[in-house]
Image 1 (cartoon, rainbow, N blue to C red):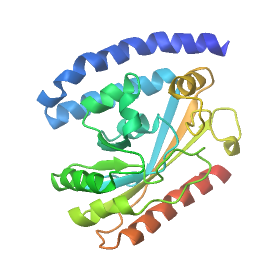
Image 2: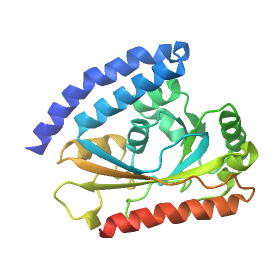
Image 3: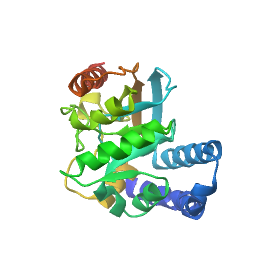
Amino acid sequence: MWNLVAMVRVLLALPVIAFGLLVSPFIGLMSANVFSNIARTWYRSLLTIIGVRCRFSGESIGEVTLVVSNHISWADILVIGVHWPFVFLAMKDVASWPILGWLARRAGTLFIERGSGAHHAIEEVSKVLASGRHVVLFPEGKTTTGTTVRRFHSRIFQAAVEAEVAVQPIGIFYHDSGQPRQHGSRITFADESGLVASVWRTLAGPPVNAEVRVFEPIGPHTDRDHLATMAHGRVRDHVEFTLNS
């Protein structure tokens, strides 16, 4: 039965994806408000179709900050983007993803080589922050199963130090409807199954709940290690609390 559900979801998602592909060449001509409204509507529509339900809590995001989040799934960008269409920093692998990678490039995502290019990334992120735009990055460096939070690599936090902006942590926790929270979610992208298999696994099942907690900004601060440690602690506490609640 779930394979049939997945097929229906694919058919419903195709017009939404096609709309994104048609609109994306004109992103550079849009005002910030127009792009923001279109992006949020697109993210929301796609999440609804694939069966991801989001619940947001915590603080609002106001002045320019470096937003940092734990990283669980390819859906993280959609979940964050449905509320705040920010500039994302992603691994270069994402640029080669079918459809999503192409759209990410069009939307102005900044890409970094895995294991290298940190200095360039810091410079690029600092420039975007200095221009008055938020940037979202995933400082764990790779995806997890969602039930733990890896150490936040502090080097990229140097961008916030150089731009003299605060860091705002976001904690994401996914769990499948009808399943214990301790089981996490099939939406995770932490294994080696590949993007297509991961997306299909998500489509062929009950709704996925995404619980997103936004924390108070930290800083501005001149110590990147302090920023990384503080941000990691808040996100880890959110995941552990949600896991056991």
